Length: 637
Ligand code: PLP
Image 1 (tube, rainbow, N blue to C red):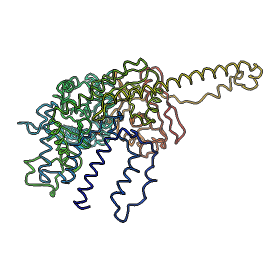
Image 2 (image 1 turned 135 degrees about the vertical axis):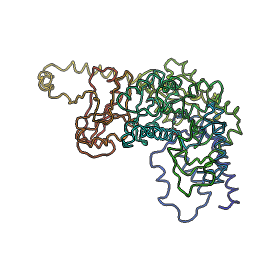
Image 3 (image 1 turned 135 degrees about the horizontal axis):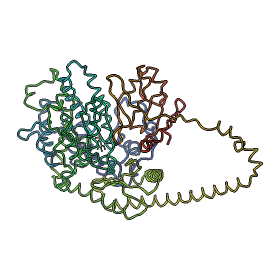
Image 4 (image 1 turned 120 degrees about the horizontal axis):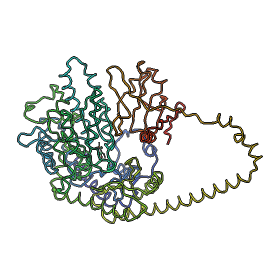
């Protein structure tokens, strides 16, 4: 393709994108395809010879689009918004056209300098303290664009880990780094995004996952008690990840309380993950939600979620950039340049070396909307969410399950989790709306998020009408099913009564022979709660905290330790959140000495988490472990 054709095709592409976005509401929100659908439509090998552009674009419409979930659709209310706007698309296009790789200042000075300036702009607009801004006199901090919030959490945890290990090494110069590492403990709430757990896995550190209060907010006292308890057991708290605007219900951890408590634990890194909500702090009336930020060591928000900027653009600010970069710096000769000491080299601020010119799109967005335009956009989404909340509240069959502060409303039908699962499932299957569930306070809830840039009040009303239609249908069916069940049961009872006692004796010997009854009882093995495990100088892990709050520890790769024969008696439960399952390696496997990922094939016992939580709430009942045949997975729901 030469530049003449690029001009032509470029205009066609802009036309295609505009058309796509303008006619989105004519499409299903979610595709109606099965896994592997595309494999049947495309050849198994790349073409040997060049193909015609028109043919490629025809395939986009015929083969790709049927498998696309339309995140910009006005009826898409799942997850959080995927930022998108014309200025941002054009900024990305320019960045792609320039095609530089800005890993150091010298590799493309404008790429680095614009990033620093734009991050200072946004940081100021959000209301971050001066020490987070790179260009403020005397500041040691600064901002950087990362690919995702997950990466922000990971790099800050890596920095905190490096800092903690350095401190411990200075105190215990003759103790191996590996041993010091085994003492480190990170903390977050049960409502924190799973990326915190993933970061802990990558950093090879333990993570204590704490129970928030009834508003899904992590409290200072909970953190304090957990840390004190861990310190008594020889562990070293080093990192706390708090969330402003949780993924499940947009709840806010109590940052002022947590920040104050952490004053008693100097050296612990306090991170604030505000992936979605952080963008809204550009509105003065929402700045109180940022209270406590003065205690934080780092803060991240994703303009690619709620600031009209396309993925990827996750912004991270740190109080002390040296503490971040010293954990990540590697300096081979071929990357050095004459201004290494005078300029920022963003390659030391993250995992990848190569970096796109991502600040361009954010710069385009900030300039073309202005802070006032972006404030208007945020306020518009909050207004839509409030409208939806009002509609839900008017229908007594439903309830609201979160404090609606921003654009997310959590709601459910009053009734069982199963009923709500059914409701969401039929709505999503219809392709008319798309929402996703979450678990808040151990209840299944449906999340409704204002997402589309130009969503209107009519879109919200349409969504509510659709939900009500499906709910009516479902409740009617449930009522009908319940009625049929009662009638059926009655019929069966009558039939049973009609059977003579003699017939029952013959056909059901269990009635008169208790020995048969006893033999027929299903076998369930009973186990006591997991005890404290203490092995010489190794870390002591409790699954059921002795302090009042519930907590559990994500201990990445802990199962590797089961190869050790010393561990024969130990019985540590590990929680794997992605499976929503507790895993307890069976004794046969513990003794086998093999180290591999936990999986049903490895003869692990799965304990239903909810069941365990129930048991923790009523401690007199022994937790019940349902043993399964090897290879079959039983979540005992
Ligand atoms: N943190 C929070 C609070 C989130 O809501 C999300 C995603 O929704 C993430 C982290 C992960 O974001 P990313 O996809 O940018 O890693």
